[in-house]
Image (cartoon, rainbow, N blue to C red):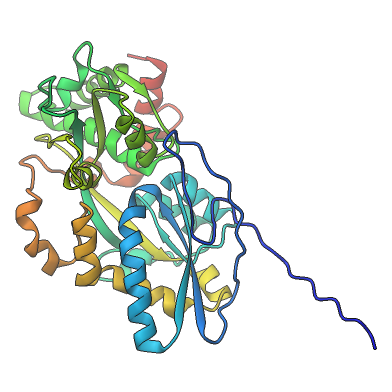
Length: 355
């Protein structure tokens, strides 16, 4: 009798595990290998999720609910393999071969990386009524208990002796939202004061950045540093402060007059979902994330809902700042990337100290 040797091939996905891969409080990655299930068996569907770090806690509640609903509907179990990273890092990993079936990222530009890698359809924003988005937020300032330094707006972050935190926009989508918020607020302030917008906005950003102690890899890592006692103020997502306040952490949240509406996308990574034969389940998950049940859980985690029904239910919890603006008010993502983040853009000049 001939012996038959069966070799099991294990594919290692960077940043993933059978549960999740994340960062510790210092922003140091935990490299955890995982076994990738490339196709579902008869009774189990395995969905690989690549997400930005800030959404981890909300998904920790939502995914089990989807799994229960999916099993009740189809009779099949759902297993999730999850990776949480800074959004830019996560997008580059997926584009480079980490085979996520569903991607939740911090900003549209990170989804564009997947499009350029030919992993998704170019019309991904036109495939649903939400233009590809799953949650919203706004950029805010978090302070210590009682707001001891009396911070009320972005300009207060420029004062001498105020130590500020925000993450690195090279790796973090959340950081780009933070930088956009400060720069865009500068444009709005300049218009109100009859001043030239771009120079005024650049000076505001430069003066805030002068007070920044460190730029961590992700929004979650930056928040962890703040929790360890680093800094007097942090520029972050509204949901990061709200979720901690609801847990009893004595932070204060400052909602600036002028701040940006943050929109976070979700997408089925078609190439990988089809390869793994989980496209139906992946599409169902994305649809579920926008249904009232999931949107209420997002809202409880501090995110602003995209679902109109839940947005109306939670309107008192999420006031609209007087000077709220949209990325389109800054010319859209293409213009912002060129103006702020190109090799000679405003952000480069801020880092280089070029007036």
